[in-house]
Amino acid sequence: MERTPPHPQLSEVTLQQVLEALVDPVRRSVVSQLAIADEDIACGAFDMPVSKSTATHHFKVLREAGLIRQYYVGTSRMNALRRTEVEEAFPGLLGAVTGAREEAG
Amino acid sequence: MERTPPHPQLSEVTLQQVLEALVDPVRRSVVSQLAIADEDIACGAFDMPVSKSTATHHFKVLREAGLIRQYYVGTSRMNALRRTEVEEAFPGLLGAVTGAREEAG
Image 1 (spheres, helix red, strand yellow):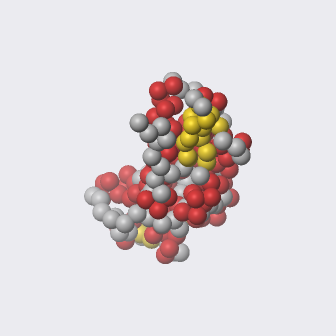
Image 2: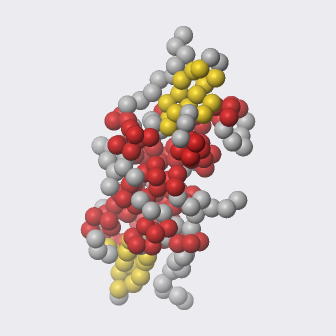
Image 3: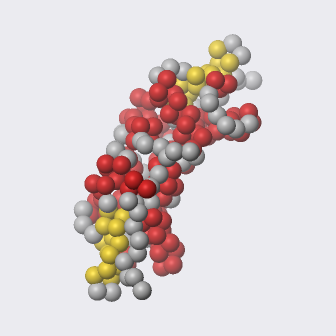
C-alpha cells in the first residue's frame, strides 16, 4: 500500500483540466487558502463547507490537476500548493484566480 | 424590438460566472480567436465545430459573462472582446487563459 497518492507532472496536465478544477468554488477556495497562508495546510484545517468525503473528492481533483501536492505527516494529510510549477505551466493563472475579486456571499 | 442584446457591467459579473464561461473549450476558443485576431469578428466567421444554434448559445454565455460585446453591422452580428474591461476586473485572467498552452487534439 502506497500512502503517498500519485501526482502528475504539470506537463501532463491540460489547461482544460486545470480550469475544470478551478471552476468549482470550494476547490478554488482551497487553492486561495493555500496561496494566502503561504504554508502547507492539513486537510482537516481548511475552511470547507462540505462533508469529509466531498472534501476528499475535491482534494483529489486538485491533486490530479497538478495544483496541489499531498503528503503525510504522521496521520495528517498535508496539502501544498504547487505554485512554481503551475506558474511555469500556466503563467498568470493562479494569480488571476486566487487574487481576483470574488463575489460576495 | 431591441436588436442590440443586453450587456452587463463588468462590476456585475462574478469570477465564478467568468470561469464558467471560460471552462468550455469552444467558448474559450472564441475568446482566443478574438484575442489573436485583435479585431472584431462576425458570428459566422469563427472556427467553431458546433451547430449554429449551439454557437448562438455560446455567444450568449460569453456576452452575459461580460467577455464579449455584440453589435450589428447590417445583418451581421459582430463580436468584440471586452479586453480592457475584463483586464481591469480580473487582472491576468484573459492572458492566462488565451495565452496558455492548450492540449493537443
